[in-house]
Image 1: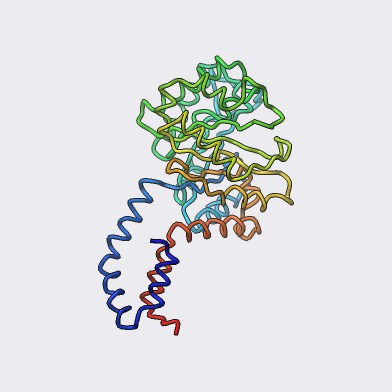
Image 2: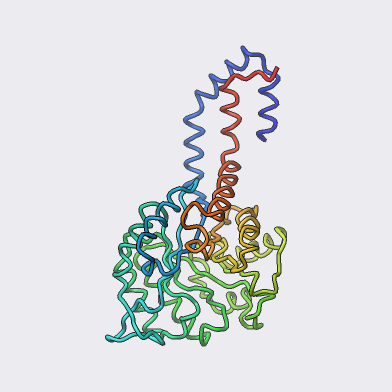
Length: 345
């Protein structure tokens, strides 16, 4: 029953009828809350943000990051970007890194975030995938799994994998398949991030998202991935703004390829300060239909834009989350209205 009809029924009830109805509601409240909890567990919605270089954070900012995350209206999912130089192979740095560190150096940063958020670990940003051999990429995955298997909830095995800048397609496929097998072999949660590039600067026909995914992702991964996300940056794509109906079509098509995965946005954001709030509203407020859609979003510039929590953009994001939360529990206002006994007369 739509909550508007419920409110109307309340308004026409006599006071005696309201008390009777209130007693019935109280009786069924435990079942209501149990249903809400079960629904939340079965269909978890992800309010995601991205934090890059958490190990390279100025003194004092760790506490500000934790406070900002902990103060949101719902528990966020934090996508941590593991820096390309935080890996040592054969006693030396990989690629163009002059100095490199070990994965273990992330432990304090991840633990700090884990205490207030769900954690998604990104194995390697797409810009640096080509610097790693297939063996190095898989070994890096294993090292991070060994270090953080117990505190990372979701493992992003590949980032913007259809992008034309990641190296040869054969190598990219071998890297993500190897990483997928390592994560799945430990019965952990997998995520893959694509790059939506229909009108984008880096678009090439063979790297178009749907064409690439259909041609290069194995059937095992198509059916076995837990989450599939994709990045979309208006700045890279001619400032193209898609309608909700157009995004609905994109997600419906993606659902056909990945029928068992939960879907959402894997990266959004802009460096244009005048457009940041506008884009937050545009994407976090999308109403995509289908029980496969879980949101995601993962605003790339969270550390820069929303820390500390006194920033205007933190308030913008939190107000959006509050609005979404209110819509998700739309029956609660009706119940409290009923129990208050207000007559409206």
